[in-house]
Length: 136
Image (cartoon, rainbow, N blue to C red; front, side, top):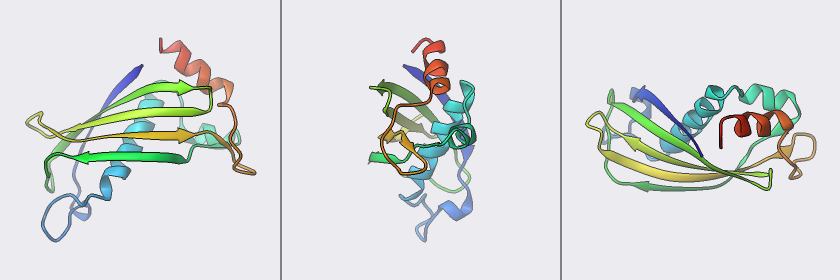
């Protein structure tokens, strides 16, 4: 299991007419936090793409617990739970507000595919090694 925390401020365009973060932005927040976790262990998404792979989201699940507003500072605790069969990655997310109150939680499943034909494939060795070397 690999964990990483990412902190950011809610931008004005992320809010809706009610002044709260629109629900669609949470998928974007998850993606950013996920790639910050990968960057933290030495992998960029660019390096995955340049190696001929893509990582589309196969499933996403979210639970909205509390609302949040423009300019609030949020922290996302992202956990890489598993690399299953070297094809699927499972992540969980917990988003906390400035008062450290849990406001959102979710899960995603991503699949490695070949960028030429979008067929499922094993993760590249450099990804597996980076995860293994992080004491997964």
